[in-house]
Length: 259
Ligand SMILES: C[S@@+](CC[C@H](N)C(=O)[O-])C[C@H]1O[C@@H](n2cnc3c(N)ncnc32)[C@H](O)[C@@H]1O
Image (tube, rainbow, N blue to C red; front, side, top):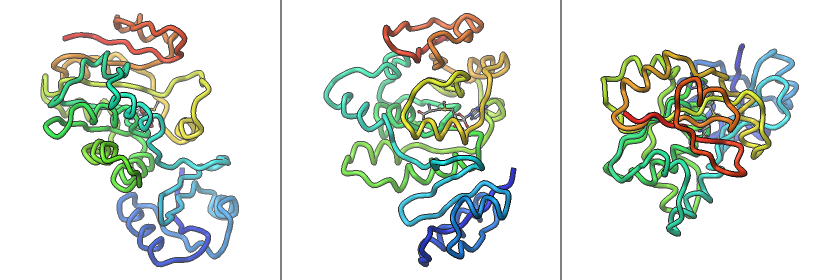
């Protein structure tokens, strides 16, 4: 798979600088836009295209109509609910509290990490690992630059460290019992209707199966709970002897293993 980076439709210096920044991190070439459409660029270069705009980066894989870009998605309204004193299923199943460390093995759009970070706070630590380089870059940048009036959201996003790596590779490098919570939300196999940004993530992200080694490594590095999210009917809950939290009328369930 090849990827090129270009600027938005209208030339401006800032976008050119952003394209150059992305190229230096991702190692993909920058191509002059020359007023070409994204589809035209995809055809000319037989490549996926990252567009560096003033406000955000967009990723168009070959064949995608709608781009992938960072947006806090559900994290915005989940955070509002938490601030009103309501509960959140991820926080509950993880038994998260202020000061905890939370390792998210499958960062994606970081919605779950944002919620975790809002709880773990200044004294805690949230790290998100993402296997796809373009997703890691776009989410990592979005977490630092997304404009919102919510101070809590800005702070929660700003505390998340993003690491581009395959999860098992990263886990192998971690010390025993070094994270309070290890969280895994791999790409579900059978699609479920979801927000359009998650649909785009499904098209751009890596699809992984939860493996024996992944679970073993997660348990080794974890101090309290390994938490897994998957479809309610996923075989992983039984396969890895996870305690499945049944949430009536919800398509995604959490399962966990306690240390
Ligand atoms: C279902 S999404 C996670 C969504 C995330 N929980 C959120 O709130 O936005 C899965 C993400 O994990 C990434 N991924 C899949 N397998 C991975 C692996 N083995 N290592 C690291 N990241 C992986 C995918 O590229 C995708 O971005």
